[in-house]
Each structure stands twice: as C-alpha cells, then as structure tokens.
Length: 186
Image (cartoon, rainbow, N blue to C red):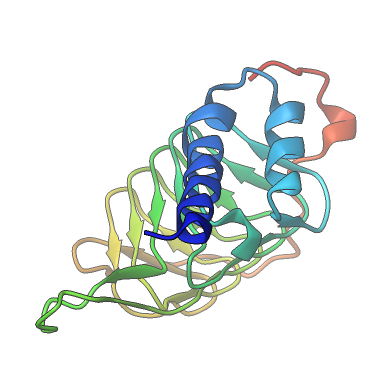
C-alpha cells in the first residue's frame, strides 16, 4: 500500500471517529455544532442537535434554520441530505442515503439524496430509505419504514409506510431558536 493511500485512510478514519464517536459524546451543544460546521456541515441558522447522534459525511448535509435533531439520530450524508427549516427529527430516527444493492454480485453500494421538507416531523425510531423526499409539513409516525416519497402535509405509518392521515395546512411557526434557550449542556 502506498504512503499516500495510507495517509488518506488515516485522515478518513479520523474524520469518521470525530463525527461518530467524539462529537456525539461532547456535553456542550455549542461545541458539537461548532465541530460539525468545521467538518463541513452546512447550516442556514440556529439548530439543536442532542448528543449520541451518528453522522456520516457531514460535508454533504445541509440543515435549515430552527431544526431540532433528537438523541441517537443517524444522519447519512454520503449521497446528500437536505433538511428543511424547522423540521423535527426525533429520538433514534435513521435517515439513509446509501445502502447495498442486494442484486449486485459484489453487493456494491447504491443510493440517492434524501430531502426532508420544512416543518416535517420524523418521529422516533422511523427509517427513511435512500432517494426519498418527505414533503413540507409531513409526519412520519414512530417505527415507520419509508420506501416511497411522502406528499406534503401527509401522515404516514407502518412497514412499509402508508398514508394514515393528513395534517392541517397552517402557517406553522415553530422551530428551535438559540436566543430563547439558555441551556448549554444537553
């Protein structure tokens, strides 16, 4: 193995460790966000990210203002991930942009970008698969596995996720704001 490849592997491994092990365990949300921004995460404004998260390739993730990301959430940015303003991603939700092609002889990876719309709510322990678009104001119920796009203001649940209701279309105004939050250790 060449020295150049070895050094690249060390750099990639260090970034992986930093994004998936060190930063998630830091008790200060300010330091977690600062570290993720230094690693390339793009933010449009204030956001909250609780500890225990797992982020793959933060440089390919864009997060809107007022977003709240709960504890132990997995965000996969390898093929691109966009999270709209004031979206809420709850405890242990998983968002994949890349997985394996089970029909490929080499079991190679395949994927596509994921888009989470503004004011959407991804409930706890739900899973969103690669290439999915969650519309504005949509709700993904706890434990759902989303295999198809979700229309705006639609509520989906189950495995695979199916329409179970509709959310009222309003001028929603919720979202995380740092100026109203004085707690630093979360």
